[in-house]
Amino acid sequence: MSEFFRQLIVQLSALWQKLSFQQKLITSSLIGFTLLGLVGLLVFAHSTGGGGGGGRGGGSGGMRILYSDLDLQEASQITQELQKNNYKYRLENNGRDILVQPKQLYEIRMALAREGLPRKSGIGYELFDKSSLGMTDYVQKLNARRALEGELQRTIEGLDEVKTARVHIVIPEHTIFLDQQKDAKASVVLRCIPGRSLSKDQIKGITHLVSSSVEGLKPQYISIVDIDGKLLSSPFAGDELAMSSSTNMELRQNVERALENKTSQMLSTVFGHAKSQVKVSAELDFDKVEKTVETFDPESRVIRSEERSEENTKNAPDGDHQRERSTTNYEIDRTVQRVVQEVGTIKRLTVSVVVDGRYEIGSDGRSRVFMERSPDEMQKIEDLVKNAVGYDLARGDQIVVASLQFDNELLDQERQRMLDEEGKENRMLIIKIALAVLVGIVFLLLIRSIAKIVTEAMNPPVPVLEELGLEIVEDEDPSEEEARAKMLLEKVEVMANMSPVNTASIIRQWLSSDSGQPVKQKKK
Image: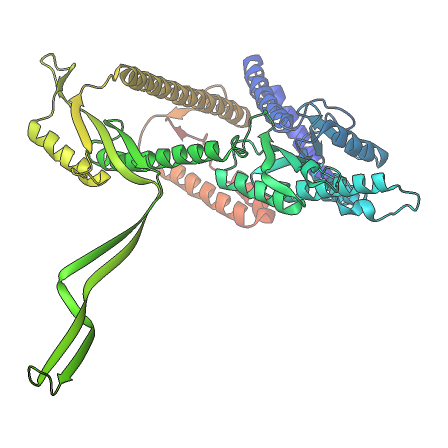
């Protein structure tokens, strides 16, 4: 193998000596550009994970995240453990993200887990794993409250939307006087995952979770806020009247929103997006009415009771006589109904619908001319809206449908801007493709030039026959002697390829022939 490389170096050196100065310059430039491109690709590939960071291993690339978005105190504990075990790491995101080598990722996580890192948020009932005989009653109660807060914190953080949580509970001292007994209170601070939020049902669920976990804690004494200080729980939890008004308003908004969505979806299917607007105002009846209705049917009666009596008189002055008396009691058909009216029934609806008109191309061929919709079309739209919202004339509902021109100036500007950006992107794409093609052509020309240079260096030009003193024969018909010499040369070539050992004897036979004539070649 060493002999092969030695011969290769000798041949390349001989080839380099045969090149001219211009050829050497072109070849050196091409090789240099190729090496620079490869080095640039390697640097770019490794630069994605590079950069200086805190601690060790700041310049190594290709690191992976060990833990992200940590508290500074927790991050300091983890980095201290990494330094103790001589692990390479890098800090990012103001020290909240820790990156390590990919090969050591799971090893480091298991090593930190053995040390209890990262530590679980809050302290739960493991606080009582180690008991102290000298603990006072006050400290015992304080630890019990801390453990309860930690367990609630872990439970709330188990929700998919919650990232971190803090729970604070206030449990007053028990007293024998009921009028002086204070209620327990609690507050919860939540940090949600970016891009996600808690629904009202989830907030109610957290409220009842905390209320059910603490003895004597009522839901109205629980406050839930987010990390920005915004109150998430109901602010009217302690006022029944205000709570009822808030619930009624929320129910009204839900009814209006549902009717608007149903009507808007129908109109958007017919006219397209942003071509119609629907607004619904609903008046609801929140009065809870219970009434009893009793009706009688005089035409329908049945015998309820009947009484008959007979009286016979004999030897009376006026003679014997007999009297009979009967009493019949009838029952009239009666219907008794107990009616309970539901809360939140619709008393009246007011619906406003505005629809954009049609647009036609103007006389100049570019501008758009607004055209109002026909009365027949507007009547059809009104009928559709009536059926969608459940229109009731006896209830006093009102519906107004109008065709107006929408202000689409901003939309047209945005559309024109998007078209300009698309045209700009297309032009840039064409320029990039043209540059790529041009670079490819230049590269191919360089390769072709280098290949030509190498070919000329490896195959030097054949010397001119006149310089060798050979006679150039211009006649086209070869003589017998030339034909014989040509045939003999072909045989020599074939035999030389098949049996190189006999080549020398064939050449000697060819030289010993008595031709005595100079070799004639045909002019090309």
